[in-house]
Image (tube, rainbow, N blue to C red; front, top):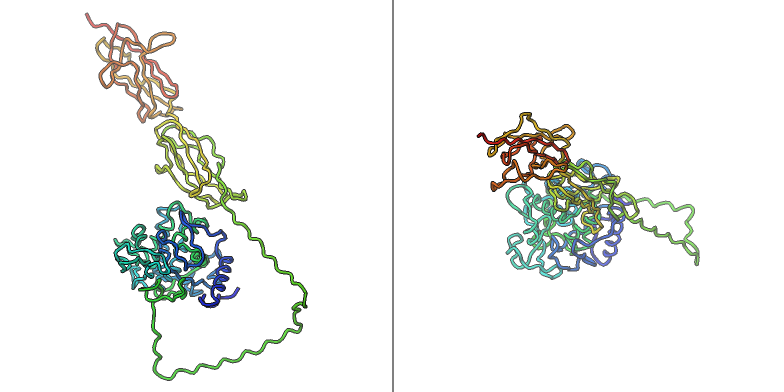
Amino acid sequence: MAAQFGRRLRRGATTAAVAAAAVAALSASQAPGSPLVASDGDQPATGTAGSTPSGDGAASGNSPYFTDLPPLNTPNKPGTSVNLPVTGSAESGIPASILAAYKKAQQTVAGTDAACRLPWQLLAAIGKVESGQARGGRVDAQGTTLSPILGPALNGQGFALIKDTDNGAYDGDSTHDRAVGPMQFIPSTWATWGQDGNADGRRDPNNIYDAALAAGRYLCAGSRDLALAADLDRAVLSYNHSDEYLRTVRTWFEYYNRGTHEVPDGTGVLPVESSTGTHPGTGSGTHGGGPSSSPSPSPSGSPSPTPTPKPEPPSKPSPTPSDPGGPGTPTTPTPTPEPTPSPALAAVQNAGTGELSATAGDAFAERIKVLAKSNFGKPLAKVSVTFTVVGDTDAAFDGGKKSVTAATGTDGTVTAPVLKAGEKTGAFTVRATATGTSLPAVTYTAAVTARQADAIVRTGTAELTAVAGQTFADVTVRATYKGAAADRVAVTATMITDDEKPVENDKGPYFTNDDGDPVRTFAFTTDADGTLTLPKIYADGAAGTYKLRLTTEGGATVVIELTVQAPAA
């Protein structure tokens, strides 16, 4: 492979074929193998970037962009560090402030939307194509461009037609919108997605920290996982509706993935060719590239003579010429190899999750596990799976979350965080879906059972007696489960008859409800230490012995005798 692909792609009578060949070669050698796809809810532009689809749904309004491609030699071998020293190809150098902004945006987005897996190299690729890394890093200490970077007026003449939406506040044009700043946001998109990436209290599209974070948020819209080729394609196409744009961005993305290094601000390599065939100017009327400059005057004095190059010696002819094939001799064409299809997500399924059951307030012992399979029936890594708790329940994952997203590992499986039961008993479901797809979900049924006690005893031993019309001393009981205190366990207290099959007694001692009316069945809950002190019990009825039965959730029972004495004569 040549050290470099010529100098740059040039437009002209023959450049269309050259550009197409270059893109095809670079796509085959560097770009991911998945097909180009439409962005969410949008259709990619067909043909070249000269077409003018509606720009309303694109971050940049489908403004023109730089079409320069990286050299075919890569900064480093695949799999090695992407934080190389200041060496290597000039094209792989990214100005210090610009590189810092991309990495800071990746870190910020990861803190709030880890499932998106935004790579800073994608921001670098878009920044290269949109503005040549802010015109080679011409920014001040705060990351703001030294002069505005403005695209052409989007007046429908060769570009999308977008009338003014900001009264010229960002782009200085009160008639039509223009793409603004190093990431080339149109004002209407910036109004929605603008960010304060450097914490200075302002959202400035001309500031690389603000613009890089806004671009990151925009690319992660919805439930995209940018580690998936299809989602990355959709994200890039949502930025600019053009297949050529996608190929160019992806080529730079792969180039930066193989290695890059930091260069001083203002020294980055400026791109030459834009999708309109014009060269970058000052930023006032073009898509914003490097500043125009006048040639420096020749220094005084006589210039040094240019040495005459020595002629190259002629190459020696081959001793035996190759046989070109005689007339009529057929040549066997080299067969074109069949492309190897890329694995794609075909299904998600249960990876052996058993029964999901827990006592109220406890964690479920079983963890939900999902397996993602490719169209070849093999486990598929880096698939984003969203777990959602559904139904009338207060159960939730760790941290009280009803929905969590995680990615499958190299074995194609992913395990949900610990699921914790609430206080509400009953059944509910958990759904596991491949994030952002219409594939069938995996549904798991879970059940929360009430807290239980397997024993309950009265804590006192004194006889419980009271004169009719008075109250008994306090009655305290303690419930346990497997020898430990049974906290918040439901206990039912009932005054019962002395029959072989006892029923609620309608005579004798009673409790009172909130309205002060007598009741002989009452429900209570034990305290954290498993104890329960019953409310006042009133003595009533004829003198004699009565029974109070307490039954716990779980079936533990204790019967306590209450003696009513006749009033003194």
